[in-house]
Length: 336
Image (cartoon, rainbow, N blue to C red; front, side, top):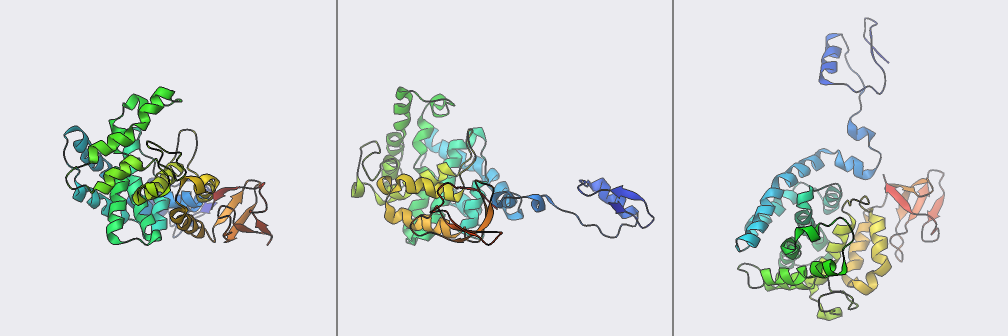
């Protein structure tokens, strides 16, 4: 309870104070009071990120720049103008400056929910930012980093040439509709190939980003070294972005759920020389975090299992060690 010096009762614990309430306290000799902000009430790591000042700055910049990015891409599609590479990279630079580290930037993107009309644009904008983060983890050259980022911006542009009624269909696609969706790889290539200011590699990536190492991809069922190096990079970015994006039917997957999905079929579909360092970096950035397991147990991540990155060692509040590579009945439900 909160009383004034004069003995007058005002508030109880848990009350939400408005600006007017604070003014009233000031008029009644209340010198100081302990209060909690929204971020103090957050429980998970990602809730804390969402309520942080630097995320709010990023979110404002992202929403401000989204219409500019849409305008650049739409002009290239409807007016057949070359993509304004300089303007796109200015947008990229403004956004990445909002985060102190690549890991922080991935946390920011995890919390961004685009408007319905921006979903495809947000997918590629996010992919470009993720490409910038992954490029540092892969230790590639500055020129390759630029190409990787531009591939992120443009590899899925063909989807914007698909009938939106099919592209955004909420229910299950028919075989005919799925075949139409698959044409976006060729449509993107046809749009970008020969475009002024666009490296030919970027057009090739638009064509090949759904090819898979085992030949199960499309449109040509290419295998292994038949697939362009940057298309292999973007295939991983595309999958990562899709798994960490909110969907109508689920929340974004947490980092260990993402890694588990990659472990499940990554060796056959993706280039493991590219995927392994990315997964190891994602896993290692979670060290020290508190997690909640599927049985309600809370503990801290103390060690990453090299042979099973999605199943770390957890130390509980009772100082018990749980090796998730052995306890396959347990899952990491949330990260705190």
